[in-house]
Length: 208
Image (cartoon, rainbow, N blue to C red; front, side, top):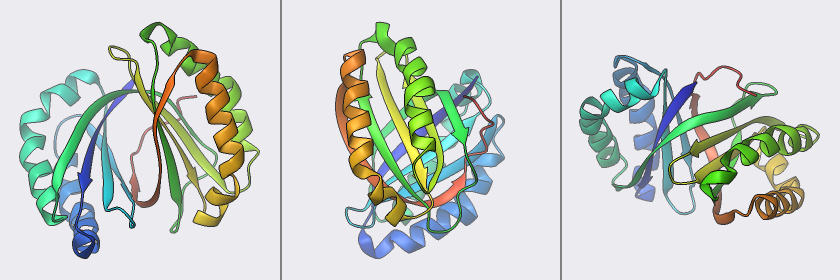
């Protein structure tokens, strides 16, 4: 079982590219020197400035033990984006499946859900048996993941696509699948957002 910590930053548009470069060249190497950290990804919305950086960890213990070391790294990265940290969340990685590796130009759609805590296992099963098989049939599909917080019932799913065109082409079908899945487990759809995949080095093995 692996874990992840996501940090949401609202960046200044003028600082986005410099922030991405800094995260790739400075933040990621610094994180990977911390015991138990295995990778990093970065999602960027160039219209709103919303950025989500996610680090992956070998265990919950390693993730929790890293907080003191990660704090200054997170703070410096947010400054390089010309913004501030909006939210930090910690997750269990429940599902991760790659059809193929994401290349330059890949995009990601994220859906945040609030589910009853006693529905989490049902949500994981449905993601594996319903969502993944249907996503795999869509043109341009790269990968999908489901992160969960068992204590609160909060979850976030992410699907990666070869291009923005591919992501947009499957939007209506994804909307229908999202709504039906949420209804079946009694979950509330909290937010849906689409991003460019700016850094793709989460390095989590197949977990589906």
